[in-house]
Length: 188
Image 1: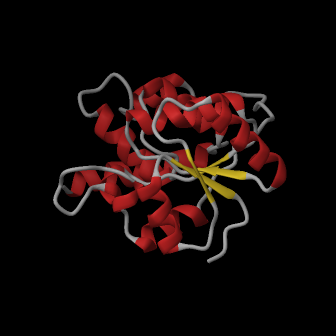
Image 2 (image 1 turned 60 degrees about the vertical axis):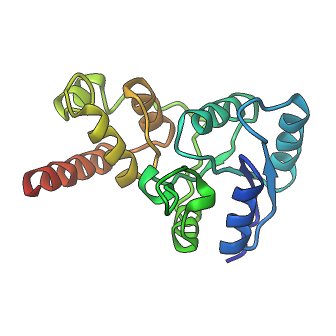
């Protein structure tokens, strides 16, 4: 699998995992303190070939993603659920621990945020409450699982609402994912 865009990852081990799974070029941020120079390289990459941000599903990874998204417009996003990034020994989490097939699948399901703001706010905060995604004891689990189902990554409640809009998740997609989540919980 050949990837046209340049993939932004956190470190050398992530680059190794990406290159093991696909043919792609990477830019490493070397942690969550992204330098101005690195941001300029990412902007240049976006201008020339496009960029896919593929960071770990943890706080530093979300922080890096947010910084890049704010500074470099139009980047694409690939996500892996936390469960697919845990080291075999259980000590450590990151893209470098993911199976090649999971990396390829995540890169096939890349999202590009729309620069066009939706005219209406189809999925409301009230919808998120009704779906027990905010303000409920199991909300964090449900949000994490919903992020997996919709392939938009794990979020807190505020981020979830923003990502649903940003990735233009339709009411139908949202409803189907919530229905699947409810079904899974009923069968547990």
